[in-house]
Image (tube, rainbow, N blue to C red; front, side):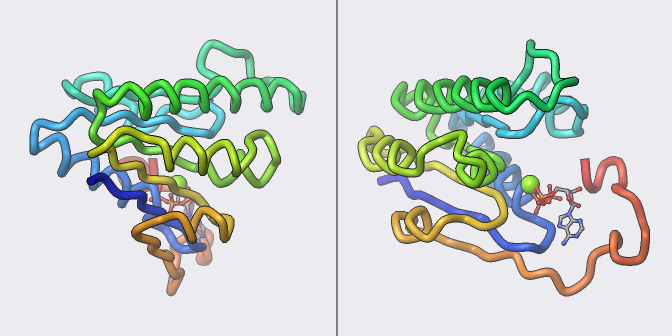
Length: 170
Ligand code: ATP
Ligand code: MG
């Protein structure tokens, strides 16, 4: 049996925890799929590493699009496309772990319907675990999950004016 895991909350560590789980699964010879529901504008360490990691399929929302405009329908389309990719990986059954990183934002902006997501999760093939990250996870998602972890911020360097650190934050 696979599990549904949710990493939410205001503290740092949601995406990091999901990637840590990916590392663990890859070490067991499992295939891992990652879909990032954020604009693919910034290069990150995880994207660099994914390109040279066998068994890790990494997809960033909006890749192949131009992201200069704040056009809502374009964002919505990109989120929809990313969700189609997510469904393909979840239903395909080839990836034992599928990570939907920052998907809660796409739900929050109503680019994706929570009911569609819950339906896909409930109908997923046996043995597939899905990790969903992002702040403000909706209650319905947390109800459907096997594991919910809330990252609690005690301190963050940003509070003291420190910028994102390469290799630590991205
Ligand atoms: P990470 O990717 O480091 O695991 P995260 O996924 O928990 O962080 P997000 O909400 O996705 O956090 O935000 C991503 C970026 O925002 C990261 O650079 C992270 O360091 C930073 N960040 C996370 N939490 C906070 C916070 N409480 N205050 C300021 N910046 C934060
Ligand atoms: Mg994150």
